Length: 203
Ligand code: GRF
Image (cartoon, rainbow, N blue to C red; front, top):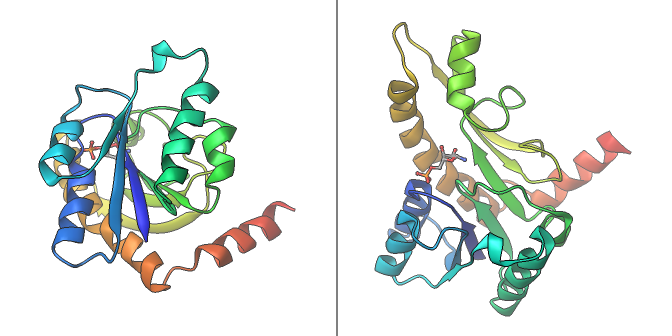
């Protein structure tokens, strides 16, 4: 499998995936890091790991579709067959969503469909839920709304803050995401079947 990772910030999930590849726990190659913030820490991480980087500055483009067309050309050039969103802070348009429907994953720090969007951990605390977690899902046109591939739950404890909870959520993400990708590579998760099942629900 030839994958591309999209990230905007620190890139600890990118690092976990790159480490899993290096350690032989994930039978894939990271062909490209795509980043909308040229100064983000994730760019440094990729450079250090010897992974090609494609950065762009959204405001230099006339539209979101325009920069996504450029990204899509890069992905096609590199024959990327799986796109991994890992803290990519931009809403995607139909340009990328349709080109990679069924082949694009996202990770979100809540048990979807609860708490989509920004500040999922803060939302969970504000609602007083006792259990939260992490979700890996396929990306469709909505906000954190595609078919769910895997979830991992985590208890919220008295006195938890956004920071303390994030500190426990991150290692769960770092274990779950490479594992889900490896499950796809090995066929334990069959994306074609997930897509088919989803179509029959929405038809
Ligand atoms: C993660 O919590 C992920 O669930 C969310 O964005 C965060 C990215 O963190 N989508 P990092 O940049 O991978 O450290």
